[in-house]
Image (cartoon, rainbow, N blue to C red; front, side):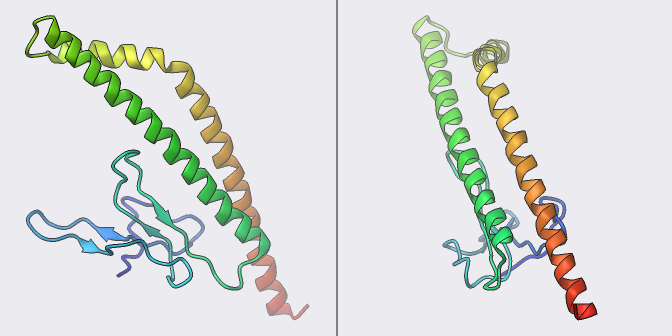
Length: 172
């Protein structure tokens, strides 16, 4: 089942078709969607799955046409590569965060503090962010560069499509 053009959560880019693999269901009812990721060759749009438990990112299943150009294929493969890189980063980051958080809580409980206040937890969060500042800065820089590359490729694909349409219309 495809739920097209859900702009609140996902903005369409260059009018490409997008869908969800699952839709938020009302409380107490079963979720609507697919049990397994669909085959990219058989779907008519991109699918977005439920959040991954480790990275907290929603995985994509990228649709591609059989008459996909080399440039469009390069864009699709670049998107897949960047999504895998992003998921890998956040999986490692979240694992490190939860391990350090558990250690922080365990050390305070061993010291005799049963209830850890929000102020104490905020100290942990600040320490964690300060300690990982450089990693976050490098991630952001890499993320922006990768997205700029994808945006450039997406622009080139759209120009290529416009030129192809124009050639068909004029018969050149």
